[in-house]
Structures are given as structure tokens and as C-alpha cells.
Length: 275
Image (cartoon, rainbow, N blue to C red; front, top):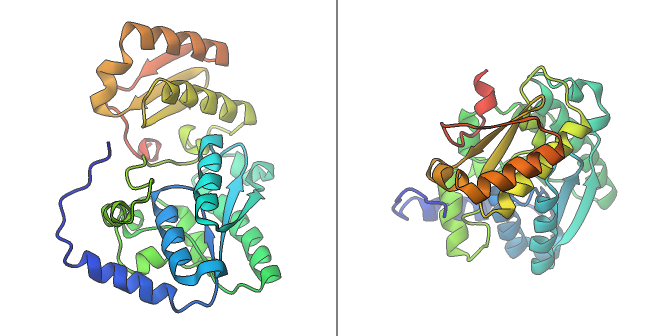
């Protein structure tokens, strides 16, 4: 269960009102929709205010978890929102596959270029994404790409943090309110190590193995043939049970990993950004 810090609703209500005011200023809107906590909340609010004048666009490619794509389809479908699945182009870009520090910038720029074309064809002026104010404190080159491309961030403009969004999502009975954070599979491979579709597939299969064992939050960092598993610190004893260890070792070796390690620090968001 995701826990959010205790917050008085004073201030939170004002932030939501500010978000409503921002979105009401648009006649139509595209939401770049990953299916995560932030973009799901933004999409739900936009749909409530703008009705059929909201379109969700989700990128599909080997860097995006198939589970997340299916979740986004279900979420948008349940609300009756027009949902476009866009086959993104980053894996065909040599700069992205080189996996340098500008990887996220390249990916987002390519994605927003394609969304801008769709928006133009549909006669929609505004494109938004689900960045929140906490993202401003992290290494997020994609934010620069969004700004350059004219993609707006209503959650940032309204001053909403991740905790704010979780609380408001819970109040709206959104299933995403306590959903674990998720990032693309490229973030599992250290900068400077070229990305391959084989490695991305191995990571997805490995993480699915752990999720299927009942772990909500996990990362499998790929260091060549070595898989370094991160789970929540409170789940470390659970993952080391005899049954779980046996399943993980067997499955990971079938996937192609020769060594399996457990990070004793537990899951740390963006841990590879430290190196």
C-alpha cells in the first residue's frame, strides 16, 4: 500500500481549483497518457471538465511495459475517453539507443513531435503531460523537451505534488491513487551501456516474474548478464523466502541472466542517476 504524508486539505483544495481553472481555459486537450498516477489524474479531471473534447495518447514500444499499456487502455475505456495508441520511434534512433544522459530528452522530443502532428490533424491546439512539481527536483531531461515543444504541464502550473495527486485521486475514487511509480525500461540500464531490444525484453520478463509473485514495486536493473533486483525495503525478507528465491532464480536464468543479485538498499527511484 502506498502511503502519503499527512496533509491538511487547506491549500490542496485551492490547488485543485487552480487546476480546474487552467483546464477550463482550453476548448480541447490532448493528454500524453502513460497510465501512471499523474497522467491518469490529469486525464480524469480533463475528461470531467471537457467531456468528449479530451483525447488520450499513449506511446507503445519495447521500452514501455505491456502491463501499463493494457492498464491505460482499460482506464481510458472505462471513462469513455478517445484513446490513441501511438507506436513511438525512439528505438529506431541511434542517439536514444546509445543510452547517453540525453536519452530521455531524445525520447520525449520524438514522442511530442508525433503527438503534435496528430493534434494538428485533429484541430487540437493544446497538448499536456502529467509532470508534477516533484519532478522539478529530479533529473528529468524530458521536461526540457516538453517545454521546447510547447507541451504544457497543468499539474506543475497548479502547484501539485505527487502526494497531492495521490490524495486527490483517492478522493475521486481513482484506482491509480496508490499505484506504484513506473518508468520506462531504458531506466534499468546504466548510462553509457547501449540499449538493445533483447535487454529490454529480458527486463520486462524479469519484472513480470517478480510482479506475478505479488510484489507491487520492483525494478530489475540490468548490468549485462547480471540482474540487480530492487524491491521495497519492507519486502526484502519476503523475496528471500525459499519458494520466491527458487522461482526467481529459475525464471531469470531461463530469461538469460547468469547472475541474480538483490540490492540490500531496496528500491530507490532513479538509482542509476547517481552514477
